[in-house]
Image (cartoon, rainbow, N blue to C red; front, side, top):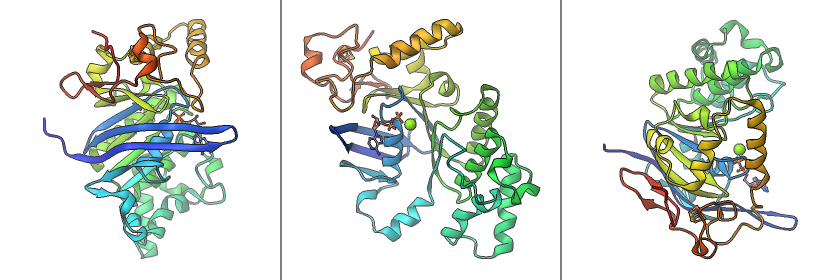
Length: 320
Ligand SMILES: Nc1ncnc2c1ncn2[C@@H]1O[C@H](COP(=O)(O)OP(=O)(O)O)[C@@H](O)[C@H]1O
Ligand code: SF4
Ligand SMILES: [Mg+2]
């Protein structure tokens, strides 16, 4: 199948200076996002997913590397051009509690991007557009003058989605959009996002630490560990036949029907993540990998070993 590349990351690096050293948050990422797809970005908490998402939207500046959006190198565009491009890429945050300004009504919140970008100068028309959008995402338009605290978590996330869609973007980075919500609400929001994708022809980068959340909504999956991509490929293929030991490790840890078992596995998963201030040499997973050999501690694996059909894996010894 032919893919139109909408966004491309080349050698992206992001280091943060912190007391005691430098956090190597994103450590050389090459990635393509295709128009119209949902690409899931998964990995344990702290592996650099949000940082990568922000880099891709140029909400933060990379330490090295570049991002090309629709053929335009985002590092080299003027602020005015960047502002225009920004309309085409939006982000939905995890926490609908802290990402909505509590002093603004939900109508004002959804309207704000339209005002900032002067997209709809007529006040009446703008308000009508906001009310129509509210209706579409499942918030009664009569609630235009209510404040975020008057809504439930799921409804607030709907407001966050409406705000992101107000500018009719093409690419939406969804950064753990359901992780803070009750399980019963998660499915509703996921369904809404899927419907909106069809209707508005959206491309999603869907970030989640929870593999079970992204399984049924993603076309492709990209797995990250400590700032690097381990594996990428068609969701079906990666889920049914993981080739990177870390992916397999993650897959084997979910689903976890037994709550006691879940706790143990979670501890196991989080307890051993090495520090990004002093990441392991060679393959960053080698201290946890049951398949590690001498070379793994010495040489980083090639960033993308092509396993065919767009399936890639960064491992010296991909699984069969
Ligand atoms: N602004 C920052 N300053 C210092 N360290 C940061 C900053 N943002 C993220 N980090 C660090 O970078 C790493 C990756 O963080 P993040 O991208 O938030 O991971 P994830 O979204 O996968 O949980 C973590 O070790 C985090 O502490
Ligand atoms: S490169 Fe080596 S340590 Fe890293 S995942 Fe592959 S086998 Fe394990
Ligand atoms: Mg995050």
